[in-house]
Amino acid sequence: MTIGIIGAMEIEIELLKEDLELKSKLEKASMTFYSGNLAGQEVVLVKSGIGKVNAGICTQILVDEFDIDQLIFTGVAGAIDPALEVEDIVVSTDLVQHDVDATAFGDRKPGEIPELAKISFEADENLVDLAFNAGKDILKSESNQVYKGRILSGDQFISDKVKVKKLKEQFGGYCTEMEGAAVAQAAYLNQLPFVIIRSISDKADEEADISFEKFAKEAAQHSYKIVIAILKKL
Ligand code: ADE
Image (cartoon, rainbow, N blue to C red; front, side, top):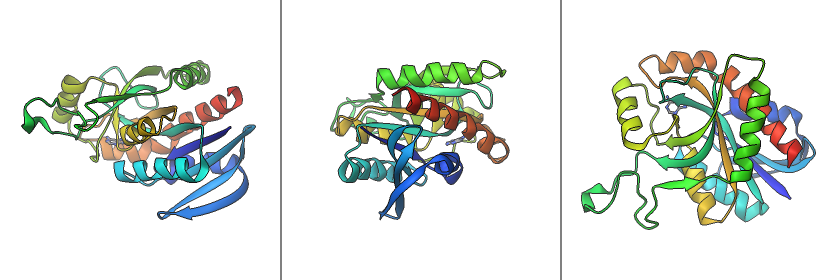
C-alpha cells in the first residue's frame, strides 16, 4: 500500500520530511515528490504549493505516477466557527469550494460543481476516524480541541469578519483554507480515499495575517503528529 501525503507549504511538510527514510525523488509540474518509508508505511510526500490548481494537479500526479491507495493532506487553516481557537484541529468530514459560483444559471446552488452536480466531497470514514482519534489523543494534555466536520476551500486568504460570517451562513463548516476541496474533488474523480487535517492558525479575521505568521508553524506540528499516528495505525 502506498500513501500520498500533501502539504501546501514547506512548514506543513518539513517535520515529515525530516522523519522520512528517502528512497527516491521525482520532479514534475515544479513539484518534488519524495518516496520512502515513514512510520512503517510506503509514502510519497510532496509540497503542492498554495491554491486549488496546485492541489488538483498534485493529487492527479500522485494517482498517475505513484498509484497511491490513500491520501492525507496536512496543513493549517483559518477558523470560521466562533468556537474554534488557534491550534485546535479540524478533521474533514466533507469539503466545499466556497468560491465556485454558477448560480447565474438559476438551478445551481452556491459551491455546486455543474458537471458533477455536487457541492461537497466526502472524506473516507476510516481515515477520518483514525485522524479524529489520533487528534483526541495528541491534544488530551493540552487545552486545544479536535473537531470533525466540513472544511471550506477557495483561492482566497480570508481576513474579513463579515466574509467569515457569510461563509458560515452559506456553507456551514469549521474552517477555511485554499486546497482541501480541490484535493477532495480530484480524489473523488479517481475514487481515492482521502482525509484533510487542518490545524487552526488564525480566525480568518482582520488580524489573520499576523496570527498566521505567529502560529502557523506551531499549528502545523499538531497536524504532523496526527499524520504519524495515522500511518502507525494503517
Ligand atoms: N490558511 C490559513 N489561514 C487561512 C485563511 N485565513 N484563509 C485561507 N487559507 C488559510
